[in-house]
Length: 445
Image 1 (cartoon, rainbow, N blue to C red):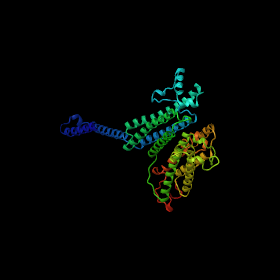
Image 2 (image 1 turned 90 degrees about the horizontal axis):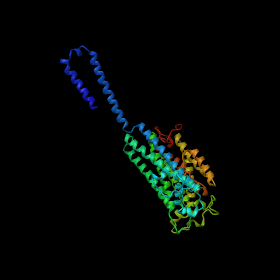
Image 3 (image 1 turned 90 degrees about the vertical axis):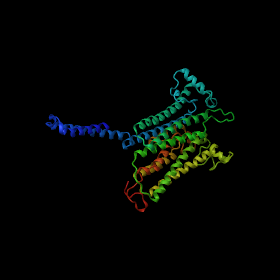
Image 4 (image 1 turned 30 degrees about the vertical axis):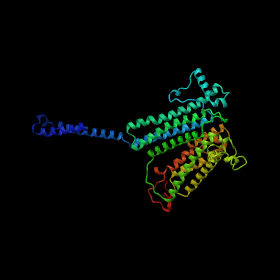
């Protein structure tokens, strides 16, 4: 721009000064003078357009927001894949097969026979082999090793999918100040999730001389690992949707506010139920009572508060943990049903109706499909996966399935955030004033 301004100033001064003593050739060539004027104007126009284009490319706009939003939705899908693989490692009891953690070195699995035997000898020094798998062969160890290795490599893929595009988009100027803070938080959360995963695995590798129980990871750390993964998934999904879906002004009504609170409470209850399921899995509490709805012959078992102090029962007593999970699961189902019935009294947009209907259908499908063994559990989980395209684990299942199920609640933990995240994105909005306390006029969608 500075060069073009100097050029324009020089040309104007030259043109004014040349009026008194221009060469005869220029006075006699008006075509040459017009050509110089046109060239200067076209140069200025081109440079101005390039400057404005560069400014637009270095700042957030609608196109860059779509790119970033799709990237975040893709990252949320990768997080779902990591949760699924985590469930598979629990199904195959593979989570303690890798007894150390290296960020780069473990990316290459053992290749030669000697390397495999060295890795197997390290596994043999830990409680899981000594107590549970003392007759395990090397081919069987290779299987569980590859299951855990795949889960860890997928976690590294998730980290790269967050960090590398963040660096690129940052350099391109696709982030405003608010978005910079959000993506930095997401990248930091991915790193924290990896450390938390190893911290969880370490709890299952520790020697416990005073305990005669089978080796397992801490239920507290397992619940934290699952909960942080769900939070990372939800945050990525939420941020991506804010960039992809248009924001419209909401017409607030009393019933709409009630429905909003109801949906948020239901989502929180689903999340709490998922965390409760992690405690069930961590304690193998689903194996204590395998009848439903009663626990054995009783509605309330005798050993519900067997531990002292009383608070300890809710986190370490398998009977109490399973009982709490049943109560939370039943409450979540009742809340989803109530949300659906409440929404039926209102005229809602098509997307809102779809979200509530899918949420309700998925809840009842998970209650209806109660697998009794691991093979059927994987089949049912695959059906849920194809049905919803989003998945997780440990939300609602029969007692045996509470231990083995890797996937059942991601539909709920996806559909519930989708439902109560609709308001900022224009799913519940209307530009018209609605009579009879309805958020939309009849016939609108």
